[in-house]
Amino acid sequence: MPLTLSTTGDRSPAPARRPSQQALFLRGFLKHPVMVGSVVPSSQRLIRQMLSRVDWAKTKLFVEYGPGVGTFCQPILDRLAPDATLIAIDTNPDFIDHLRDEIRDSRFIAHLGSAADVQAIIAEHGFESADYVLSGLPFSTLPAGVGESIASATHEVLRPGGAFLVYQFRARVRDFLAPDFKRIDHGFEWWNVPPAHLFWAWKD
Image (cartoon, rainbow, N blue to C red; front, side, top):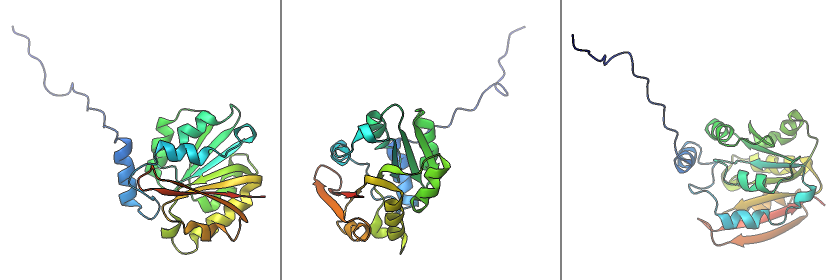
């Protein structure tokens, strides 16, 4: 009697394909355009220049607002000391899920929440202050009052000598930083899409 192969009941469903980083980034921009500043992740030259003023030997806690798909996360982790921590805060659950899946590093924490709540968030993870905070959030398009609240909360959470690192496509972000930070250094990176203003606001 000839053998017959069943065509039902023995096929497992194909695993769902994960979207690429670029597709996820674009989807995040389309869903939350006021929270994602660009449809293109930051360039490597921008990352190097933005991080160049960090004193890594003295860094125990580094915080990032709006990490997206993690363009800055691995470069930061590559520079962090073995006993330091990176907390990435984002309001987009898709980005947080992606980061938790992709970055397997005991020094890394992906936290779903608002940058305005940074003090409560780092306290939840056992910290009293941060050494550096990085942000690519588009301050100019945030809802009224949110940018000011984030700048103030960041100044409060930084240790003396720490800095708020901000990259933006408009120089207007200085207006959000100036009320709390008296010393603000400025740079510019042409090799990015689009070119970006870089700010280092220091808590003296």
